[in-house]
Image (cartoon, rainbow, N blue to C red; front, top):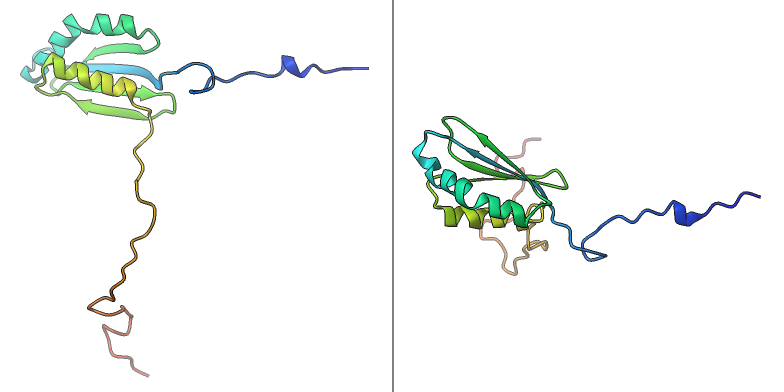
Length: 140
């Protein structure tokens, strides 16, 4: 008699709210230009604040790549495959750290519309109800 133990086949999948909290942000890419003036704040951020951020968030992969002749960009990649790009042109390191926190804390889903009910008017239209016969006279 073959008994199958179901306990061996059950795999718990980590979800937020079930066991522990999982950050949805998987990877953050920092792109900058070494010669551009618009990347000055980004370069200063990378030298002074990025290492402490990486130590506090070991679950997030950090990638730093030069991007010649382009404005600095921070790109977050999430578990569901969504990517969020934010340009940090001419921003100070303090502002850039706020953007990095925003990318880290984002859920990875686009914001959905808040209103799902259609607009229903209580007053009739001044122009009347549209009909295809309004534009051309009907010919028999």
